[in-house]
Length: 220
Image 1 (spheres, rainbow, N blue to C red):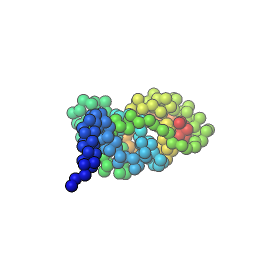
Image 2: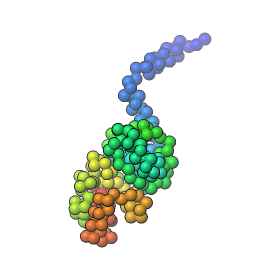
Image 3: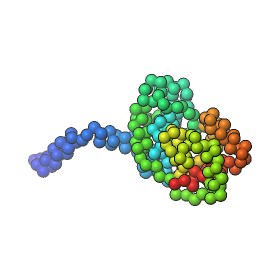
Image 4: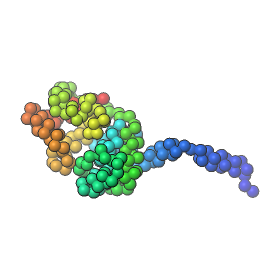
């Protein structure tokens, strides 16, 4: 004979589920979709590994652009067609980037799921890496940033509003790998960035990139 207490408990659970709000259901879905990201990017999208960036607090548009590039193996025509077909993506700007595993992971998500993931992490707070920076290099980097980088990477590289990615507080190795990808051509360097980096190099030589990285690493 079926235990009446068990039946009552099951009915309570079913009734409770029926009253879960759409917003709560959407939040749970976003969290589940984003769980795959936490293995590399850390709990809450805050990286504990120096080779991967913190993605919490990044802008939605930046995350969407990155994941679409990964998903479609940097096929600019394909990504541009998707952007043009979706009014919500009209401000997303394609940029090619290298990948180790992200191209495989991103293929498992639809465009709608990518937008959900992007919003989830954009709504979370950014937390800078706990690391030491060279004070002298950081000071030199601060001057370079103010002259060459602040217009696109506002507030010392900490603003997500410019959709250029948060630099301040990211791990030094991650920043070094990223700049190496730019230098090698494995990652697209926007024309404005290329011009400013050339001017920074003309002013400070090979130390320019190192000093900028130490400046961003020094930001909390």
